Image (tube, rainbow, N blue to C red; front, side, top):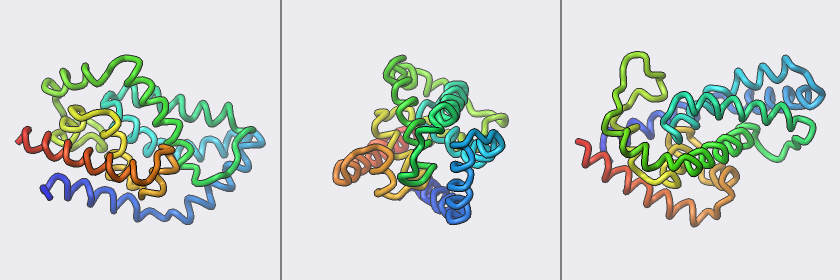
Amino acid sequence: MSATLQRISAMACASADRSRTEMLSADAADMRALCSGDEQAFQRVVRRHQHNVMAYCYRLTTDAGSAQDIAQEVFLTLWKQRKNYTEQGKLTHYLIRIARLRSLALLKKTRADKRLRERAYAMRVDKATPAYASDAAVQTALTRIRSEHRDLIVLRHFQGFDMAEIQSITGLRLGTIKSRLHRAMAALRMELDDGE
């Protein structure tokens, strides 16, 4: 395993160590209040989840502006659909599922895969780049692989979701996720090896 992939795994483990129990109970309480129209509860949910949603969208679209727009749409959707929300799992899964659908729709609509591959060679990372985009080699390699592969790598290694959570978010069967993730990691390794 390359040093870069080890860093990816370490980042995922560090993010997974957050106090999930506290966040789950806060999410449940805030969503009950939000369903009644409590704007302060909505603001707390946004503050608690905006970085995670934004990071996911950025990794998938590789465009900060698009990621911000999609993240905004995710929370706007949450607000508009608050009365229809039913607690069927973690709020994070619900938000990432919305972000995933919006991000993939954007990629498909604009045929961004082709443009991202062309732009990847010209991409420059400066000191103003957000922390979730700091590893230029990995980010560039991610832009060169298929969006379906990029999606699974981001969910597993950057967002820190386990296989069951990825299944909940994507709706894919577990065997499909495992085989696609294996192919995705092989494609990422090949791109990283080519870039070094």
